[in-house]
Image (cartoon, rainbow, N blue to C red; front, side, top):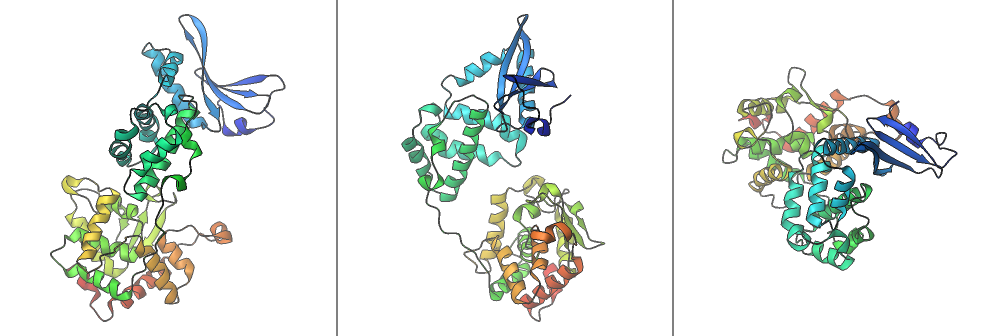
Length: 389
């Protein structure tokens, strides 16, 4: 019988004796102790003798991860390597670079999308300073010094969180025993600037809208600026969008689960004034992506944002923030008397409280009306179809 989280968490399966083993198949088993603790083990034969190696502890190591590690150990045996010896080899004076490389290969690449920036950031910012240091020898002041050499505060914050995740992963797998890093908090590492909420004025929005008529700006860039302005979508939703996500007959943009931050499908109406823009983008694209870079390759977040920022700069907006469009839509629609839940649906937020349970309405018509009213408020008496030129 295969293991389940329900079994692993169940108090009724706790043994009366010292421990009890629950098999998952192929030698993988969960050992439940009288204390309630649970650990994963792999039982196998080596040189004609019974052998067992600990994989990790539950719930720090999820069942899915234990099964993945089990398969890695089986492959080691097939290649003539004893998993016990491999674990010991890794544990012997593991350097920071070796630890990060192992975490990236065995965890990040298997579980994260668009993760290339992570390794690039480690190589640029941390490998030169502590890459060759043994992880367990790096003391608190050394960690702080390494992170404080990162000149971009937000990058320091991101790398601190990624490094903590990597260290925890190595500890769960018992590749290392401990690290002083886990005793540090974000405030010990970096002083972050106060959060800013950029809310654009209608005059600023009008200037960015008129960039659509500036032929010196690549059409894809000005169109991206316009679409984010009115949809209030997250950058990732648009840069990953495919032509097939748009049903222009029904005038809908359906953001699939894999492109949604909240892991839910988002359905937005496509107002008439945006239809020609999307059609033009489809005509310009050489593959199924709505917007892409050279040679048809999708753009990462930084590149996509930079394109929009350059387009906004031609409108005289030198402090442009793409996320500001989301704050702006929520604020301006509220000022216009639009019900808050309409803006929440447009932005792709999860409904709060009781509405999240009982209210599954899409409010397509109401959102469409709100988007058109927002459009009219921005452009005044201008011809809305001018955006397609």
